[in-house]
Length: 546
Image (cartoon, rainbow, N blue to C red; front, side, top):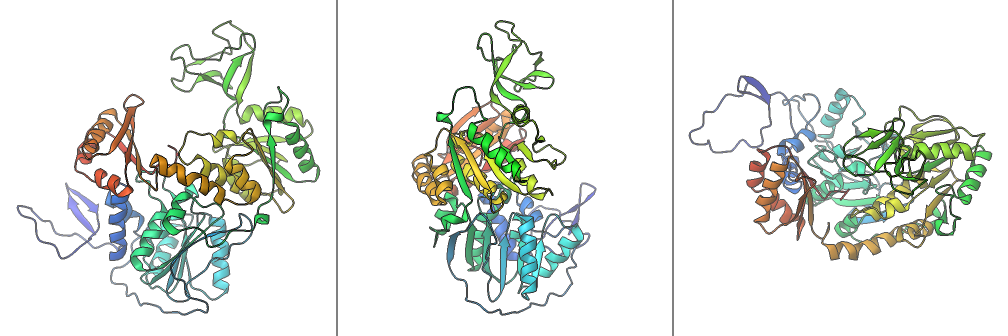
């Protein structure tokens, strides 16, 4: 509806009609009822999500509301349909192959909600189900507002299969019977903006409220999914993974850097058979760490002392943005060696290694993916090369997986395994995945080599329990204006929540609680509203990069 507020017409939601009139309040008339909104059960789910992720209720109501107006008086006749097949009950976690088609179980009566972070796979599944006679509703952010609104309105009739990305979890289906989540560890299911809600957790909560069955299908389960749903009912066959070749960099001769002999041979073989090779290194630029060839001193900033990066314009400090020419402050030498080269430097080295092969670099800021036989890029290349036309991918090489395995993050192992899953999905039937590491016995490397992702879960479970990290405890990152962060930390500290920080000039702190519910209760206290009044405040519940 629309109501007058300070001389403006403001859009809002009617959440309850049976409420007592507040005392000493001047009520205004509703100007217009503009659109139908989410049903009552979805509104209750939005209230739960606002508590769970410490966000404003309006953010979730907005996600559950159609893009355009839907007439309130439009009659919604409930559809009924029964399809052959067994009934879905309970909760199940299934480990599926990282490659090939996925068999998604659907309810034989009522509606099924399918959450899929891959738009390409969603479209293919929708076509297949429509050919089988199913009524399919596609809720995709790639569609225009008019199409999404029409699909939202159709979902209200029920007896359908709703498929889409994370926003599809709020679809207004009245007869929810089953919920299916694909690739539950994919970061696309989590909103990058605060509140940082996760569609997997919302889907599981919605299924529990509706008494619906839950099926999670993933090639690499997370600890959160195993704790929420249970151990997988069956393991995927190890042959479902492509051939994994592990290069132990401890055996490499000094001076080779990231370009090992095994990598060079694999690149020549792949390009020689007419396929494309993709090299992955999560470092942008020319070099993130430099050392002077004359005196071996690290290149540092003359203003703040931080290490500098090599870019086209010279040496640049990532902390204070000071720029200077390629000159060593210690001995005034002008030649440096890259201790941690970026993709731009590796691209030049690969071009020198394979002089007759076209080489290009790709990162998140690249305009397009060049149609060349050899690509080197950050993780973004795994997302973008799939949509590019041209040669089939015969090799995906991770030049330095240790950077991911040893990252100072609670979910580093899960994220590194998911990086390997993306590469496994990219190669063709005759392709392979090459992993360069100094930790060949790490559980992530072993999981990929054996095709058994549960090795990572088995290693991560006791670590999370010992540290009290999610899902065995509550964790939130608070960032923003120093005054607001300090006020927020003071407010929750009185409830028994452990406060680590603030750090980084008072603009960042970490909150840890014995449970997720305890953290949510603490973040729902009125003291947080007073903290937000002091400046910008962002709360990231269950942060992925901490």
